[in-house]
Amino acid sequence: MTVKDRVLDALEANRGTWFSGEALAQTLGVSRSAVWKAVSQLREGGYPIRAASNRGYSLEADSAILSAQSVGKYLTAPGVTVEVRPTVTSTNDLLRQQAEAGAPEGTVLIATEQTAGKGRRGHSFFSPPDTGLYLSLLLRPALEAREALSLTTCAAAAVALAIEECAGTEAEIKWVNDVFCRGKKVCGILTEAALDLESGGLQYAIVGIGVNLFPPAGGYPPELAEIMGAVFEARPQGLEARSLLAGRILDRFFAFYRDIAAKPFFDEYKKRSFLLGREIEVLEGGQVRPATALDLDPDFSLRVREADGRVRSLSSGEVRVKAKKG
Image (tube, rainbow, N blue to C red; front, side, top):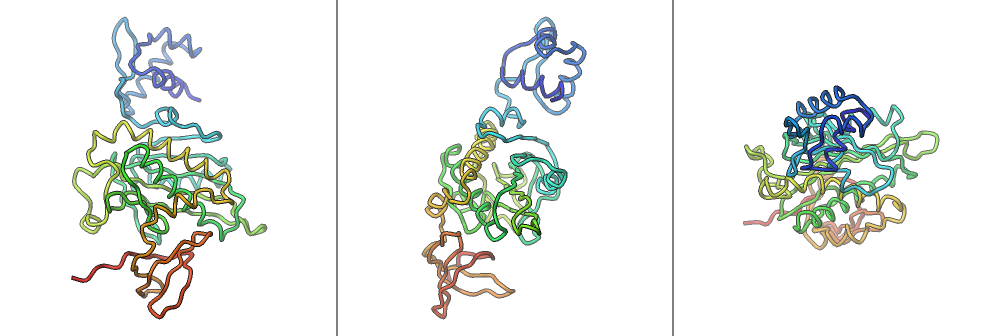
């Protein structure tokens, strides 16, 4: 851990408290010059650290900046290591590089902006600066490739529960990987994996979670305006809850993940699934077919009845609620 991280740990754990440079240096076993340099780097990075003669340094008590330390205050899951960066290309892409280099399970990368955020089926994911929470989790599960859907559904259940706890608003799930609040999409999940060709299982998996915390100042792009929403309807309302939400998502996910094969999150997922019983459209092979969503199978496949009466289970693909005529 760098001196900068250790200084931030001390200030984050005691927000609003003043520490002299000498006291910090003695506590951390470094020079006062090293403390001064670390504080300067943190302030350049946007941390609201006050400095005053004869008083020292203090991190503002109401600071809402997102950091590994601010998330760590709300994180209890063992074996999880969090890194926070203000801007990245894609948290999934960067974490994949770490996975290929041997990073352990439980490595988490969080950002507040993505310049090349990724969605499903090659789509981009709108990730403007400082309005969302974008996190990717590195996993090395003992699962076969066909069971990877459990990771996505586990994440969706964890996000929904965390939103309800932190924001006090009902969260619903659209099969298979979207979370909705107040009828608008507030979260998308993208799971990518590498196969172990010898075992037929997963070498590793990256679960990417993108949450819209508050509406962007300039609004959503026209093509997204009708479908996208935010967890918090006003920015100040959600600032202090950002770190809490990140911690709760990770805690919920890894609590479920410990027994992933048993799918302990199935009931939580199913009761929030708003497609069941509704008329939908299945987008598959370049075609759109009407169907009725009947139920979720134990493996999280969506059981549907098509217009010809045939019942089948979808393990992947895209569905949408059928638009009402008139």
